[in-house]
Length: 99
Image (tube, rainbow, N blue to C red; front, side, top):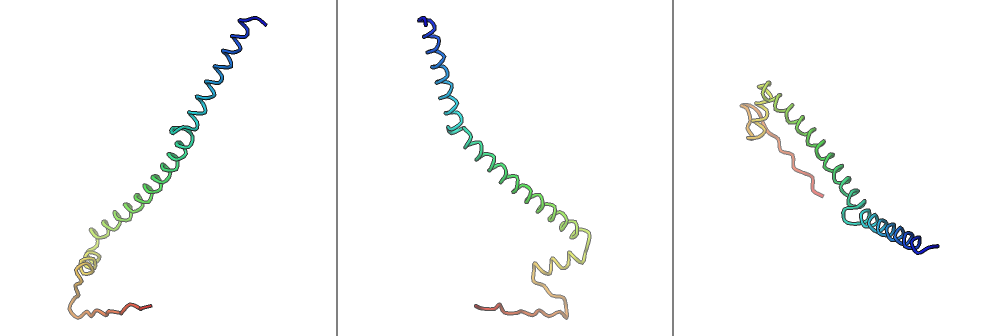
């Protein structure tokens, strides 16, 4: 084995060692696989929150439409919010059960 072959092999081994260390640092470092998994989990959580907010928006839009189109619904909502009664109506208050 010649001296050039020895240096060539040593250089190849050193290159592979550096490459391996770089890959290990990249995969296990702060921007590695663990960070990627955390980001994916956070993305899923935010997507679920967005879906829930979209459902809530649709419900509120539907309720808004019903209030705009139905005077009886408007009247009920105003009376409920302001605790108003029509003439002749009576309100019954049922006490809460105590434990």
